[in-house]
Image (cartoon, rainbow, N blue to C red):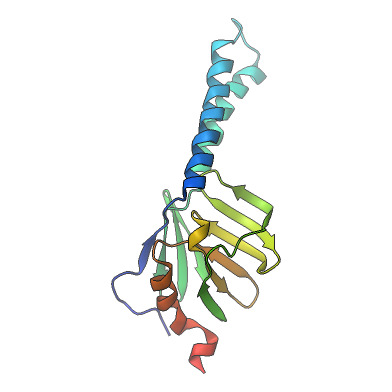
Length: 174
C-alpha cells in the first residue's frame, strides 16, 4: 500500500541545540585554522602548505553537503533531503515504526558524522543494535525497522510521521 497522497508528506529536520553548538564550534575551528595558516604563510609556501590552507574550508563545505534538511515520504520510500541531493530508502517489508525519544542514548559511532551538520552514519547501542541514522535532534527519534536494518530519523512532527508510515508495516497488512 503506498503512502496516502495527502498534505504533510514532507517533514523538516530541526536542529537540536547540541547540533547547532557542535556545528558552530567545528566551523569556527576549521575557519580559524585556515585563516591562521593563510596569515602565517611564508612568502612562497610549499604546495602541501597551500593545500592545508584550503583543506579546512573544503572540509566545511563538503560536510555541509551531507546535512539533513528534511524527509519526504513518497510511495513506499523515504527520501532524506540534503542540500542539492536526496538519499532514497525503500521501505518494503518494514516491520515497525515508532516514535522513541532518546532511542539513541548510549550509542557509539561505528562510521559517520557525530554532530557536524547532522548525526549520520552507522551507530550501535544496546536497545537498537546496529542502526543507520539521518538525524538532527535526538529527542525526536523515529525508529524504522526493516528486515535487514534499522533506521533512525528525526522529523519535526514525529507522531505524524509515524502515523503516516504505520499503514506500511507488515503487521498492519495482516
